[in-house]
Length: 491
Ligand code: AMP
Image (cartoon, rainbow, N blue to C red; front, side, top):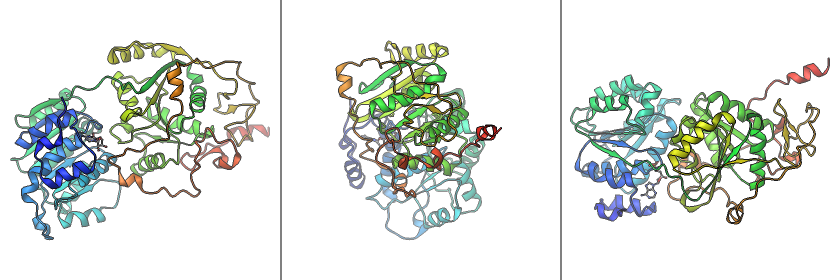
């Protein structure tokens, strides 16, 4: 059963904002959480980003705060009443933008504070007074200590992505922050899982919470065409090149299982002429934002990422998702491929299965309750071979433009044809260009990208002229490796 927002009797300014965002029916988490929060109960919710969770807590909290709404410019009239804590800067920015949109026709103000940047602009905003403060824990503590904000009138606290906050080690910070807040308050905790640690956290900070578990959709969207190819570890990059090209894909996410593998793969793909950026936990906040920005602006075509780094990011409608590594956790498979095939658009999810991955594939099969057929991947004649050094040995040099120290060439790949697809799948091949989400956009990431040169309209695997090639085959995103081979050549 789905119900409409009109059943909620939201205050007119909130209802108007919701209507403007194009929301019609509530998502399951909204349907369950909004009435409970409106009643003033604590909530322990199992829901992830992408389920409509932000509106599930923000709308009822804003509704409850409407009684405090006032147009005064005095900071004292706008104390922090709702505090939303999130583990990362990206998530904080995303949630804050959504809150702003929901509150845009009200006089309720909001701000976001996160680490990794100058405190001054944040301080100025805080000093003006904000009703909703979205924050990462460390930076919030800095502001509390600097007396930039006072939290003694907080009525609502949201611990969002709580499991991840614990993973990152924020528990002591959370405990300190919560100790500054009035005991009498409503606390909402959202987490992807209810691990024993999360249950302990809830037991110490929540009062008689209503547990809401949105049946995690382990079903994969029927609009996503899924393939599992049997590919040896050494052939995965070559397989990626072939599929990108054969499908005429404009952009894709490439998931790997480790931070190290992520950086390495991004570097290799970049050297092979694909415009690639990497997103993993070892990158600085700034680098991560830049990576996202360049993907969203279309300046890079491939985003190589780990599950943790990509989790919760509101990037969807990606034409294709590649599981370069089969995920260790079957649920991650569902999350990964949920990035594509949204809103009725057709999507493609391709997994490269090495012989040691069989058990992981069985786990996925069990979870999605669908028999998985492992397909052989035959290489096309013109798909370049990639040498162990990560260079493309292709007679036509289709991708690698800077071939000054290219290998001796391993000859062409054996004559081969890709497996045939059913007719209706072939029809879907003409993938519509990368579509941005229609309703909510994250203005931060929507800022026009200002590269040195205009971004080419063709994805890098389609570009064949030298003109499009990054200098030395490497973009500014990836630090070039020293050309050790060149040293040996002269010997
Ligand atoms: P969230 O899980 O809160 O990050 O939301 C994920 C995306 O779903 C955001 O882009 C929201 O704008 C969008 N969204 C949230 N609720 C609804 C709804 N009821 N109908 C349509 N889109 C929604």
